[in-house]
View (cartoon, rainbow, N blue to C red):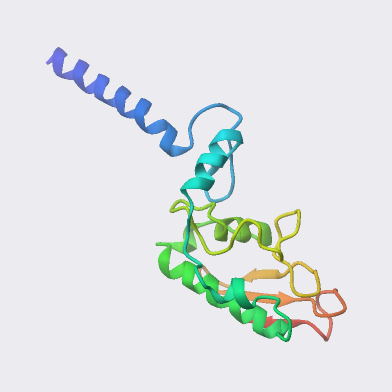
Amino acid sequence: MRMVGLVLALLVLLWLVLLTPWRGGGTGADVEDSSGVAESGDLAVKQQAAIRFVGGDDALILQFGAEGGSLRGDLEILRDVVRDCQLLMKNFDRYHLPGNPEIVRFLQGANPDRLAWLPRDFPFVNEKGELLDRHGTPIFFHRLSGTGFEYCSAGPDGELWTTDDVVVK
């Protein structure tokens, strides 16, 4: 009986040692974002390489902010991309995505499945990691439910909650 306990203890220890790197374990320098994916020096490089881009010839890349387009059209493209993301990510409503930069990181692959709909060098993402509308103003994401969002552009005046705002659900 004592031997069985010892073998079980060794198996648990071996399991913890072998799986720790896959769960984002490592040095204290690793920082987890809201999706639970660690980002730091070498680990971030390895994770970036492991990200699978599912956008392909996606409308977000080809048409978002394109000349001749509209704010409403851009927000509809964004809505459709987030819906695609929700279809692929099981239990999407469990992820804590309180605002624009967290949603952008999630769409860029900082999620448990390391799937990306938005490239890291997307021209409409600012240095703060926020997705911008065609006027250079951060898009406001309002979570209506676990999977429902409202997307709001401040419009040409750059101020939210004025008459020129564009909202898409």
